[in-house]
Image 1: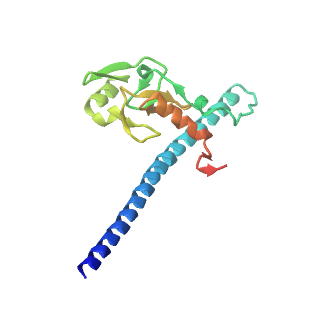
Image 2: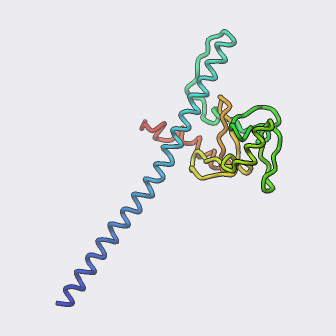
Image 3: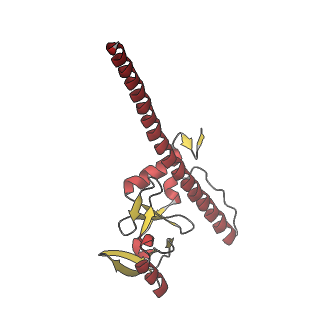
Length: 177
């Protein structure tokens, strides 16, 4: 009788452990899919900004433009020097910003109010990597600007490369080819 109970407990333990391992595997894929789907949404907005910028240039110069849909995603973003980024508004200015030293790191903003905001609001010192959703320190991040001037902060060049590779993946913008 005791041996039968022991065998029953072993079977239940094996079933529970198998179920848990399936749950962990499914959850890890779900987390990766969530990261990719968030990155795809950001990538889609970057693409739309690029096309809107191309249309605006054609209107300003009074010529028709044929927007090439095969432009590589790397063309949608430009790496920028952090010293030309207002880290309060997360916008590329194209002009040298004032350096604000906080905890030995350089952050950039222009104007007394923006510098004050950087010093008083520590949440402005951080952003999320659009690919991994990890929090990155803006002083250490790699900054890229989209066509509208919006800044995306990546934890590394490798993260940026993987981000733009999503545009060439089998699931382009969340739809399968």
